[in-house]
Amino acid sequence: MDGIGLFTFESFKKIVLENPAIEFYFIFDRKPDPKFIFAKNIKPIVLFPQARHPFLYYLFFEFSLKRFLKNLNPDLFVGTDGITPLNTKTKTLSVIHDLNFEHYPEQLPKNYRKYYCNNFPKFANQSTRIATVSEFSKKDIIKTYNISPDKIDVVYNGANENFRPINEDIITEIKNRFTEGKNYFLFVGTLHPRKNLIRLFQAFDAFKKQTNSNFKLLIVGKKMWWTDEIESIYNSLQHKSDILFAGRVAEQDLYDITASAYALTYVPIFEGFGIPLVESMSCGVPVITSNVTSMPEVVEDSGLLVDPFSVDDISIAMIQIVEKPELRNTLAEKSLIQAKKFSWNKTASLLWESIQKTLNA
Image 1 (cartoon, one colour):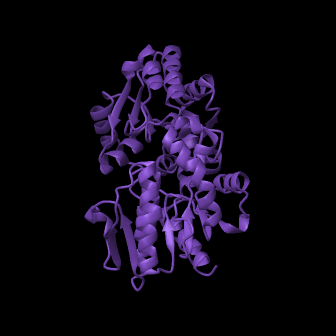
Image 2: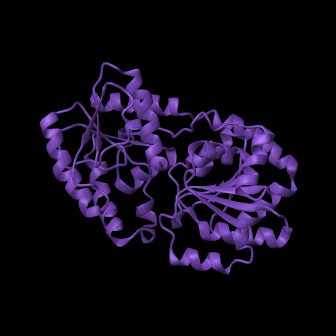
Image 3: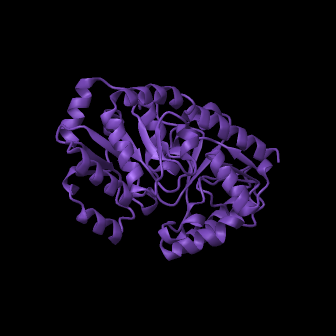
């Protein structure tokens, strides 16, 4: 699952289990995996059509879901990815994670861009309340859609408690399995243009040229939006053989891969929160991340903040964290402290508070 999926699963798992007297209807567009039906007070509902394209989004939300809500008459509908049926009589809480499509629309296919930019202002304005994952995103929604601050709640993301420091034997085994036994920088996330992979690749190439180190760059994530431009830049790199692609990995492998990294290099140009930041910090792994949008808010002084539009800036941070072990050790200690500010338990509590406000609106 990506960030939205993790937010939804982790927070509602805790909310549902803590409220056994309340009925929760989990709405899917296909037969759900049994792991999502984790309590007796969950009723799974499958509606059609499968919403995997903007036109189908419209049919799913404005016809199938709206009709279902009218018949059920629930106390509340939570739109966990920001989308809610328009002109419904049901109270709605819209979870808008970020507005990247408003600021970088060119990074989405035309049909997705048109759907998001045309409809999200309507979702935001018609929702009873809005929850979002950072103070940055709250301010962005207020400014972009002219929404009252009183209508928006900040519900920070968290990290699975299995992200934690591990022993050297496991670290050695992970490096042998994934990076030919070498130290590595880590990127975790969907391979999408806004994740700034091109500049990350170029910065790593510059780092290798300047240091002649045997470090690797390990990329964990699905090539969801792997563009021709990313492919072209990757193929032009002198040290592309030192960039290793693990694809999607099993959960336990992700915990161990994260905890075994020398540093996380996560430098998107736009982020509503950035869950991999907290996952890495929870392992005591220092992060190199962007000095824009929400990332300084999440990391504070426990990582190296860089200009994501500067290949040199990213590369210099990589060199610093390798050549100054005392800096890395200091950041590792700060990371463990900073990570304690975020947890899925806190996320669930904040989301439940937002749900209560919506019900009482």
